[in-house]
Every structure is written in C-alpha cells, then in structure tokens.
Length: 282
Length: 232
Image 1 (cartoon, each protein chain N blue to C red):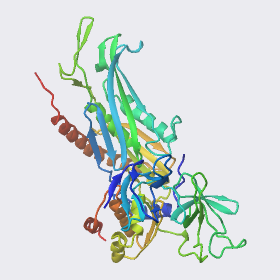
Image 2: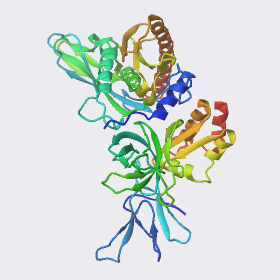
Image 3: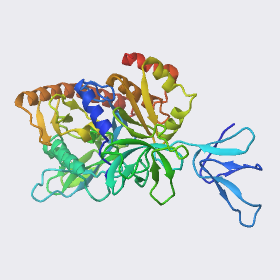
Image 4: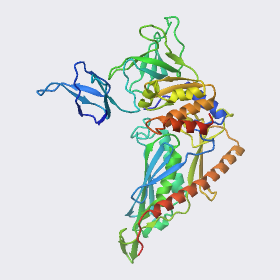
C-alpha cells in the first residue's frame, strides 16, 4: 500500500529549511547518522542501524559442488527481499523500485567489486567449494536503506568465520569450531556506500544520508561505493538532476573522507567484539 | 493504583454506574455469574477514585478512529462534492465540502490535494469509512477546525498526542515561554506546528520526538538541555 505523497506544508517547510542548510533532525548537510553495529552470538550476524533505519545481515556457509565453468571458485549469493516489516509501502512478492535498486547495488558493491576472494573459497577443485550466503533483513525504513544494507552486509562478511577444512589427497575433513578455530573469509577490500540526495531547486545543496522525507521529496540520488584506499567501486546516479563535473568531484571527495572515518569505526567495533569472545588457541 | 493487564485479562470492575473507557469490553457470561469485564489491550489499568470509570492506558502508533476526536488529515483526492482525507487509519476518511463554517453550495472551500486540515471525526465504525467535519456540531462555527497553512507536520505516538492535549503537561508551555508558537494536536499521532523561524519549528519537532514515550522519553530537565544545545 503506497503511502500518500507528503503534504504541502511538509514539502514547503523542508525546502525552505534546506535552503538555510537546516536539516529536520539537526544534522549538517554533509553529516551522516552515526552507525550503531550490534553483533549477535553467531559469527556473521550483525544488525546495523543508521538512526531509525535498521538492517540485519546474516552470513552462512556450506560446501557444494562448484559450477562446471568455474571449478576453482566458490560462490557468493545475496538475498535481500524487503518485507512489509520495513514499512507498509512494501508488498510481499512484488519487488518495488527501491528493492530492485538495492538488490542491483548490493550485487555490484559486494559481489562484482571482488570484495571477497572467491578462489580462496575453493576446497577441492571441481568438486567442493564454499557457498557463502548473505541474507539481509530490512527491519525498519527511515530513509537510506541502501547504505545501511551495504554496511551491514560488509561487516557481516568481515565478522563471519568459516570452519577449518583439511584436504589430504582426495579426502576432505571439516573440523568443528570446537576442535579448530574457524578462519575468516579472505577480504580484498572493504567498500562502503554513500547516498546523496539532490533537489530540483538549484539553491538547495545536496545532502548525505537522506531521511525518508528527504528521499521522497528529492529529485534524484547519487550513490557512491568506495573503500578507504580511495578506490571507487560504483557510482550510480538516479533521477535526472543535471550535475556538472565540479559538483560530482566535490561529492566524491566528501565520500572519500567519510569512507576513511567509517572504516575506522568499523575496525574499532570489530576489534571490540572479537576481544569479548572466547576463542581458545591451542 | 495501577496494574498491568494483557489482552484477555478479567478486570474486577464493579459499580452501580459503571463506565468503561478505551481498552475494556463487557462480555456476557454464559451460565456463570453474569457479564464479565475483559481488557482488549496491553497496558496499565486505571480507574477513577470512586470506581465508576475504568480504562486501560496503552500506547501505539496506529490510529483507530473514534467519534468526537480531533484529527489532522491530508487531502488525497477530490470526490464529487467532498474530499477524501488520509488520517492514518485503515480507511481514508471522507470530508464533505459543505462541512465547513459558512459553506453553501455556491461557496465551497477550495482545498488542493496535499493540504492539511484539522477536523473532527463525526462518524466512525469498524469497517466503514470514517467521516470528518470541520466545524463544531452544536455551534456550527469553525472553532479552530479547517485548513491549516504553512508550518510543519510532526508525527508521534498516540500517547504523546494525549499528553500534549493535557493542560498539565510541561512541553508546550515550556516551548511557548521561549518563543511564540502555534500547534494543532491531532489524536491520530500527528501534530501541526508553526513558528516564525525554521530553526524554532525544527526545535519543536525534535523536542516532541525526544519527549515521546515511544523513543527518547526525556523529562523537563532533559528538554532544557536539548534546547540549550539547539541555541533557543
């Protein structure tokens, strides 16, 4: 059930206060909501919240036969279906526009950017490889679910540990987590996604990490996925707001700055969580 | 004295002139000692001092229309002579074009799609479309109802709206002492606010969200700290 468009007072007030660079939740135009990462008991279970937007990511791995045309690579699949739990505007079974955008973007950012090394997932060439399955549950939509989902998925992949496997000749032995410490996935780089919303009035500056009202009243969005080493993975622009090169480069520089800060936050949080777990090393 | 009740709990309410408020239902007992009072919501059970009025105090965000409640709605469609209004309930409400003060067949209000109106629910039944009116039923005068222009719409939980309508609550007088403001509180979880500067309107919106029992739950001292940080 689509919610009705925002009312005229809400629309006019948002535009007039954005012209004065005042956002409705008190943030600066280029300030993101502080991400809060909560880890569960299982390795690979992360809940990420950006303000009231919450996404849950869960990683599981199992051993399967590889694809015949790629016998040396493991497989990664991402499941991201938006249920009506996120908001009453999403219907089960019918992918909305936003869901299609999020699915495609997650595919580009997490799979096609080669964040996880697929060849390291191979156990026995042509016969056994790891199939890593990332499931995302969208718990609450308060704007910008895309950034939240990318962050949750990436942190879950970094958090996950797969069982240690020993291969002797053709024999494969899987060691239980109680016998041998599980090992992390081989991660090449950590991409983060940042979304900027643009408005049709050129007097209104772009804002990062839009809330639901800002997203609905925006004329277009620009999403950038990059890592802390200043390498761009994806740049996606939706909507049709004309932007010249200087504006785009300014936005990219801001995203580079935010990526470095976010990387530090994520690393600190992962270290904190890992220190709290008991992993016996013999 | 208040006890927490869950849906289905029997409530010991006995009085000669018993009045049941929100969240309580009378069930006719079959075979046993007469009708029993059951609660239909989870919340705290309250009653008046002489035991004649009983009700369950609970909180939620989804509005269920009840007659004689003032609500804020947004016009979504023009239907013939009247309008279809979204008030956040399961069905859109209908507002007749003549239900305004001084409206005649030739002089109807000119409301556009997306306008906000402050109206009173005149008719509300479970599976029917609720009906709204923009005047007081007895005096046929607007009494503050009608279109509200400018300002901003803040959404909050239903308990917060009831608290804002309570004259003993601290928030609106505290804000009003710092700068002049206008507010129209709807029982459907929506509050329309207006002040001179956008900074002040944003401050009101953030204070309402901070004091909301659903999230924040700030008290008076906390609000003063928040206003100090916002430079108001």
